[in-house]
Image (tube, rainbow, N blue to C red; front, side, top):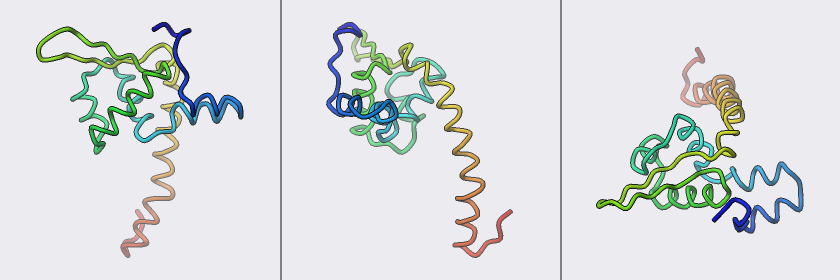
Length: 130
């Protein structure tokens, strides 16, 4: 199926009627999606290595998120006719275009953790913030 023939998921179609921010959230706002994109920015990965790289995600959730990202044109799934089956995931041009946003979110998350989460956790455990 070409990019022009891709069927839009209903959440993306509804978001389109609201505003571009909602479209972005509809496409990228699911569990683990930005982490998947972040890891695929390093290059093509097989399912197992992607699962290990993403972290404590269940196979069901990872599969669902990959399917949505594929449907939305962010991830490309390539399957090879081998035994056992070989499947690789990579980013499309649309997916690679997310690199600056992933970097900005990563930087913001680090700052937020340092400035908000760590001090809050230290206070809750009775430790002094460092």
